[in-house]
Length: 254
Image 1 (cartoon, helix red, strand yellow):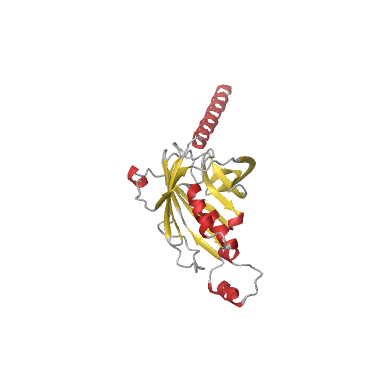
Image 2: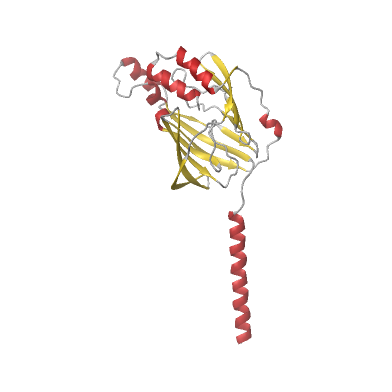
């Protein structure tokens, strides 16, 4: 009886080790290629209208348009590249003037060479911004949250010297990519918020796919420029547009 009891104890102990080992291995699986679908939410009334404005025209615009625009951009990536596109249009959106993201906008990011190539339409012009990735000084915090089933850590950075950006990234996805041209964290950005633009991006779906290399050879066109030269041109052309002009400039730098 003692021998039988000892054998049972050894068996159960071995089974526990097997389960622990399997769990550890499962947690150690990292995603190197795939596709992330985000839900992008923008409060367009806050961006383009004064919420306290009692102007009749402004009030009519609020009633005729969606307060929150919902879009579903897609980020496809492998170990070298990321391709960010606008995704399918949401038929429920009712847009204010010039608040719709052009369908042709897209960003190709080479996160190994730290470069971007972004096709972006601003009013009547299409720019092809070719530059280095944002040189952002991220501050990683201890705050975490779960996004699309992944444990993410919070990081804070800023663009244009004063516009704060809050990101949530997961190192379970090794590609250092994110929505628009944001990157530079130790993993993929699944959540992003820019309070001064009243806009957030949060991943709703992550798919483990292996996209062909041709995915990242999208044909781009536009006036070739760097981020800085594009900024200079926009500042000259819309410098007197007030709050709307400033936010348009910030959007061009994403």
